[in-house]
Image 1 (cartoon, helix red, strand yellow):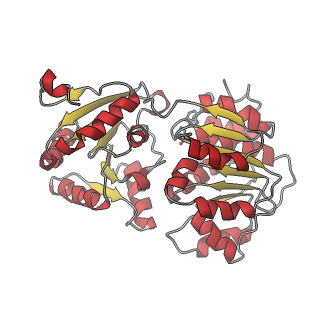
Image 2: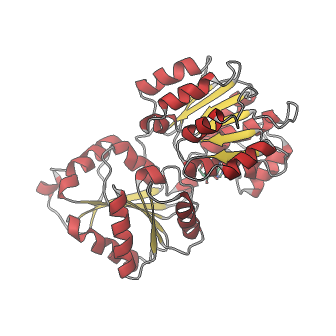
Image 3: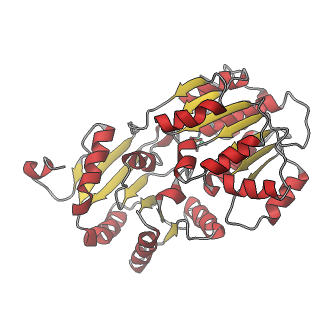
Length: 379
Ligand code: AMP
């Protein structure tokens, strides 16, 4: 479906064309009409499906109807700083030909500039829950005019323990509002959490979490732990991979790998929770601008990272939670582009691999060392 058929107004349509969007994605086609009609949404969609535009576009359109003032009319809650920045970037891109102002507030940086931004007045506030509460307690944020509340990546917000913060924020948002609730997974605990927040929501779901995009070619290498760095270096060199996102399990592991790559002449940077916000943003920008070839990330820091043209994702270490594998490799092969996801599996990670394969419903093709059928049976 195109944005014309979805009744998107011209200034927003033009901005979407500028962003290179030719037609709506599945989540957008399914969600936009309901949001324009004022309905609440319970949406199950992963990052990469176009879910940000699925809520940002109709929200911007609805905002044009009301009187334009400098009160916060839309509040988007999201788990990480990276996501907050990306959502803000999206809002700004789609509002290119509108007057609507948006601002992202998140922890890990001093609040001065965020407070300045709030003082100037914004209609759309994108926030991580902890910083938002801080700012509310200091009297910098008033949520009484909120008309639309978005909870983005709700499962992730609950995972990292934001539940109490969110509940406190909800008390300050008017009960009469539209609520859009998005989560990559929809287990019972999430539904239970969503239920009292939503009023007669429309349920929308795309690409169940267990499925991986057809356009992502997956493979696994069986490799000893101590040989992983060497294998990665060889792959990066041999396959002349110009840009890849590499996942490690720990912050320490990420830093160590960056040093090992550096010694082999491969320019890499790490992003994880111990890095300052500025360092993380710089690393991401350097990566986007191709000043560094390899970005090494832990899951929390990476989730939602929005990088166009990411051909390679490497699971240097397999995640404990099988769904994380799907999220990780969802970073590549977006919007129908081809992507490659390579996983390294050492002797201790066999059970993780088994769980991942069970979730995605197929056996990931094995690359590298030939192994016999008997060994394969164990995976
Ligand atoms: P998201 O799921 O919101 O993180 O979006 C994933 C990526 O898809 C982002 O890079 C968006 O800019 C892009 N995107 C969103 N909607 C469309 C669309 N209709 N056509 C092409 N790309 C899109």
